[in-house]
Length: 308
Image (tube, rainbow, N blue to C red):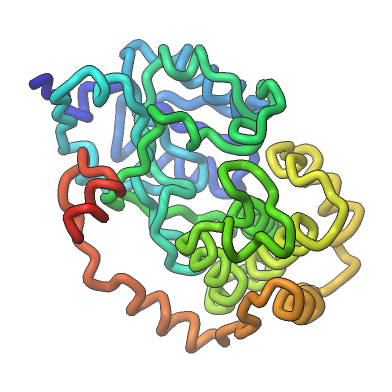
């Protein structure tokens, strides 16, 4: 068995346009003095390659620009029992500040330089559906059970909308492919439907949460009910222009929520039940309130198999 202290791995703080990235950088440097920062690289694939190039260790830890880790994470060890584990990418869960969801979105990850430098995803994809908007369909990319951070994607109206919009698109897809309206319920994974429902109804208790709800509904609407190229979701410049041209100073988010909600309910059967501030706060307080981390090497698949 090969045991590696997480504190012995390089740690990369990957930032782009997050409103609190400077504030979070100070906190992360206090938490992880050896952290390195990569900022402003355009494109998800290119940004991850820049992070890999900056790392002096073959395996490294990656923290997104709107994520704050649990300091105890850096006291843990990774225990590799076989070559498959040593070559895998790990994505641990994050707790989402907007809606309380706990899954890989925005969470801490651990990559190998070899994996990153050889992958072709997002703007560097060959156009195949399973690499155009995600990393996660590579068999060496492992969603992990434990949760070691909190993600804050609501730094502004735009960022909250973008976070919701992106998940509103991606949660509709079946391994990167867009199902038809008639296939939607059968081909979209039950857990993705659960996450999609929460994105579209929870979050009014936090700043800009209303825009995350509106964004999630709009992303689903354009993906499933309009003739729109859903692969645009990986292009941050496109999303910024879309916001400026179609949303900023033009429509209020409550109107968008009502407008899209009615049509998503009628045509896709999605719940239209936005929780008010008190109900959102209550939901997040009790949603998985008894959560316990088990082992940083425990995958989601293994946890489900043993009934954790």
